Length: 396
Image (cartoon, rainbow, N blue to C red; front, side, top):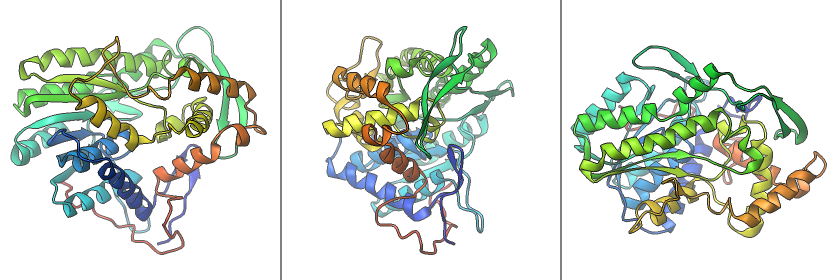
């Protein structure tokens, strides 16, 4: 079939297998170009099919020759209906890993569930014995709690007495407008923490440790974001930020549990990037389009794969892992440079629908968004018939 992008609001309903495959190959080639990393050898990536999770799996495999198991929740293809992009990403990754002689298997299902945890434990036990790195990179709007059965839904809202009001942009049209978001109530805050906080990460580590599947010196890393004052009301001081606070606190709890293995738990604070999740957060697309412009002009822009390759090579597997005063690894250091933030703050005051094409990088934002779904990828003929029925070779 011929597959074209079909948009509904901030979501693309289709994805292109060839475009997704080329994206994965491009990331693999980048990691290989940077040389070998003295990193992990047996890696579990929870949330492995897109964004930072996918980049972590690619970096582990093609930077350190690691065996990888990926857990994700993706929609498979049906005749005449493309799969979700993470499905095609995972298929492409496994195809290239097998070609390179690397072990790579995947499990598709709800990573919050006891069933998928047990299935993963069984696979590790039978195939790899033990794991020396666990990456936790889940991004989900809801969670069915495995013990209570309660369905928790996350919200993107500020916390406090007043609505949040600021600029935002519709990145499809380039229209800059004012947005107002009502503050969250306590139940919404608690639900967001239940979905996006650290409880499930700790459950995974507990399950792996109890089953004796964590190797001596095993590390685990989860991903977070802080951002600037421009976005903090809706992000870091909002419901998501409260969940990230919980995630970061959980790292210390997990770290204590890994001490007898000489293992460590880290949260890595990463750069603002175009993702399916960030595109739905008001204010963030405008901030990112201005940030991209500044960072590209300075020659310091990074995407997911550049961030994670640098995390592994220069932080996580350096002689000593540098952390900030809160114990976090910071690979948002280029984004948060004073000069970069000062320039973005100035451009923010100037941003309108008329000025944004000149002072921002909305075109770059749109391209990155389309790339997430395998569209607008260099070298792909989108007028050509493609086979949507792609299989993941190592799907268990």
